[in-house]
Image 1: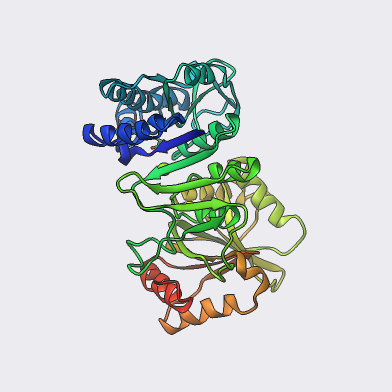
Image 2 (image 1 turned 120 degrees about the vertical axis):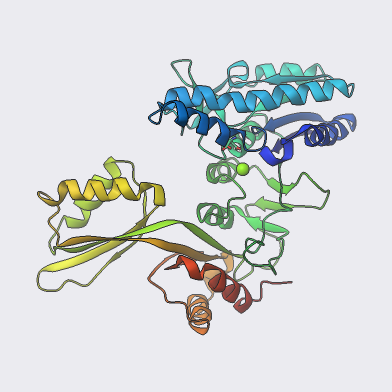
Length: 403
Ligand code: ASP
Ligand code: MG
């Protein structure tokens, strides 16, 4: 069997944990499997490197940042190969160049395009454990790129797809995917399985267990994932196309505090206004979410929407720049202390009243809803950031998600 095992930063944070991971991989190797290991940078090393860069140059170019950040993963794979070697098992570390893992050109947020598998296959055939850097790639200029924060998951899934692996295991510091973040909802329960679509909604909602693009890729190539803990041996959560169990009405409650709301008040109520507004924002690569447009009155209308907190400044500046010309409006309001709370469940599609039940739970604990958005398998509300805990616990309870 060919197994791809990915370990996150906390799983390789120090010497003891590196050896723990090495032993787990060796166990599979000794059972006769081919083992490919994908690693993140140790602990918070990526943040440490980013801080160092900003201290030297607050306007550090993305190219140099990638050059710097890729050293984090390179350190962990080399140390891991050394650990395995010291345990008497042949291992070899490879970086994105050596593999090679080809990506698009964008620094800091590149997309994997193609992975050469020859070198890996040769090393496996020589009965080595192959330890590969996550998060990084190379572009057509022969420069290092990175796949965006948390991107090692995507490296692992891409490798599993390219190598037609039999298993792809994502090891982390939690036991799997939960019905809610246990730090916010103490009664949260681990899910035995979850669909790709549910996981995608949860990932993009800030559940933070898996890199969003890794789930997209797993769905596209039919790679079944297991998310489990590197610190114990409890079975994790399987992420796949269809779950065997009866579809739960709601599988989980997620929150995303990295949200700010912008309201553009008194726009002209005529064709093309929404287009211009979002076109300008898109030109600056600003992702918008939950859009709400008011009913027009006296020839004007309001449009509000949410953006990630770190895009707020640029979004407002962009709107301000166009206010005098193509985007006439009365004022631009911002609200920073908001958060998105969402319920996700594949079973929602065929059941009425799910949204109403969520709203009732919020009403019961006095939480005001500022904005609402839905998809086939998700309902999201925008609420005051200070009420997230109360809201999530109430919703979790209302849908009987606890054990
Ligand atoms: N080391 C990178 C990060 O911290 C990639 C990863 O951990 O997946 O974002
Ligand atoms: Mg991660």
